[in-house]
Amino acid sequence: MVLVKNIAQLGLGAFLFFAGNSHLASNRKEFLAQVPTYLPLDPDFVVVASGVVEIALGIALITTTFFLTQYRQVIGLLVGLFFILIFPGNINQYLNQIDAFGLDTDQKRLIRLFFQPPLVIWAIWCTGAGTYLRKAFNR
Image 1 (cartoon, rainbow, N blue to C red):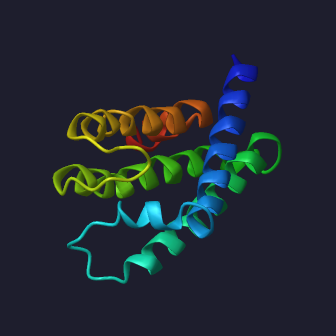
Image 2 (image 1 turned 45 degrees about the horizontal axis):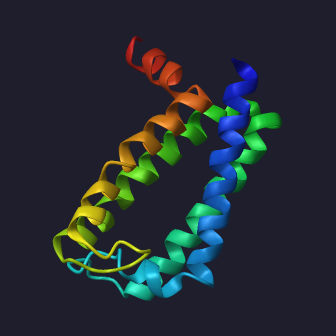
């Protein structure tokens, strides 16, 4: 099971690293569609900042798979929290019927919303963050 969790953590880390890089380059315009319209920040700043955070979290996931493992669970919690914090962008894209990333129908945008909870679960499961939370709340 440890090998499976390590592979899952590396995969999630790589996913975040490459997604973050695409925020800064190839998909920058597409990511603008996910910035909530009510957010009182420059949308381009939000895209760049979230890209930098994704890159950092991706590197942290990859690193804590084999090194600095004592931080693995905390990184898992941060990644899960990040996925929760960016969820309003996906909701915004759905509610405002914004086309991006091939999500050009209400049905596709709605289906996309159901992919966020598994990402949170993936982050918490593969890093052992659930154990960390249970210990923290059982003190």
